[in-house]
Amino acid sequence: MDLSNARAIVTGGASGLGAATAQHFRQRGAQVTVLDRDEAGAGAVAAMGAHYARADVTDEASVAAAIAQAVGHMGGIDICVNCAGIVIGEKTVGRDGPHKLDSFRRTIEVNLIGTFNVLRLAAAEMSKNRHEGENGVIVNTASIAAFDGQSGQAAYAASKAAIAGMTLPIARDLARNRIRICTIAPGIFGTAMLRSLPQEVQDSLAAEVTNPKRLGEPEEYARLAAFIVENAYMNGETIRIDGALRMR
Image: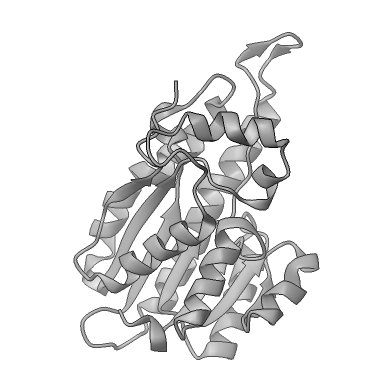
């Protein structure tokens, strides 16, 4: 799919990996609508030339309304990139007792169910397209925690492993609609949240990466998302982008 005349929605696009993706897609000529709860980020979205639609990915009506807004603004949807997500750290049994069930449930709700909620509604819109070759591309965001989850990451790792696990069956489901789907599993990336940590903490994290010994740049995630969109033979795959990092 040619990014220069594509219409994309990006969840979590007001910050982090989502913002980098939205900006990169705009620079490549795509129309972009950012779906995000963070209304404070709407100004930054507008500054990059993208459209903003408020959405809670866990709420069906909210996402349906945001997608309708995106379709009204762009005339349709060709690409869906899911970057919205949350991170918690909580051990199965900690000093204060067992893992809180509400926090586990919330992590699954946002990261997994939120991703599926958006992609299923986006895919329904893509199915209305009548393009030559293909009608749409979906890019989901997992994490290397899906494979190398650390202590305290049971909820997060479970949510991201499930995103990786549903990639192939969804690719098979959507083949008849000529829609592709891939998942990106990032390692440690230099988002605003990580860059706010003390430099010595950032350096210790970077030292764990095999090569190059640094945090990933959000733009590197964005370029991989663009590659998936543009390479029509990429389908049903989960791709690590982590500098060969394997978490201990």
